[in-house]
Image (cartoon, rainbow, N blue to C red; front, side, top):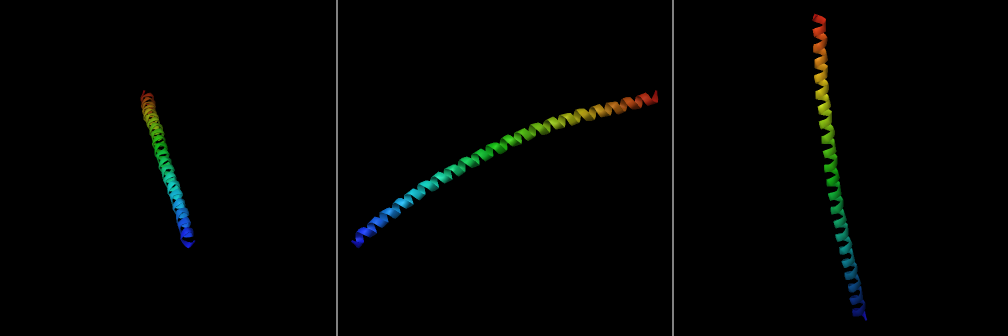
Amino acid sequence: MNKRIKKKRKRELENRIESLEMHIDFLISQNNQLWNIIERNAQATNSRFDKIEKKAADKASKKSFLVESEVTYALSQETS
């Protein structure tokens, strides 16, 4: 009887271990998927910031040109 109980416990433990291994594999898979989502989100966010920075740089360069031309115009009006 003792052998049967040991054999039964051994099977139960093996089943638990197999179940836990499947759960671990699933969690690792989910973790990898989340990291992929995070990576894609970071790339998209960086892309958006790059576009915003480019627009801001374009506006700043246009603005500085207009300010310089207004100063030049104002100086030319004062000398006349």
